[in-house]
Image (cartoon, rainbow, N blue to C red; front, side, top):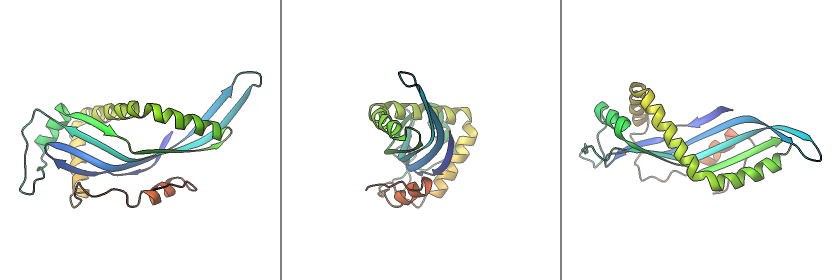
Length: 181
């Protein structure tokens, strides 16, 4: 598997909580199935998984808040370090779509749709653990990256609806994929 495309999320700091939203990622990979039964058969193909409307929040419930004049929190190195060390990380995934091509693509899509419904909470918990571990392993680099993320999205208000343009993003990620809004 490899990441084909990614969309940077918008970041904001509100009420002592670092929030990112509207992140997206597109992953390509290959699959291989082996049927072992009356008819032994193998099926190979490739897949594209698109995850959109990703949101991650990081909150340190023990720290004091650094409120600014506009109601939003001011972001500094110390606050980000505290959030990374002591924060509780929560991840939410909006939409998960997949496209399979090759042998047994219909069967793979059928199982994927069933598994995603039952495993969404597990996927969100695992994604939160991965983000938290990644931030802790390279704390200084994470602080620099978060400050850069704030610089890219400082003009964005946290209450804006995120829906504009994601259909074009997904279409550019996997040609021929259709989305409904």
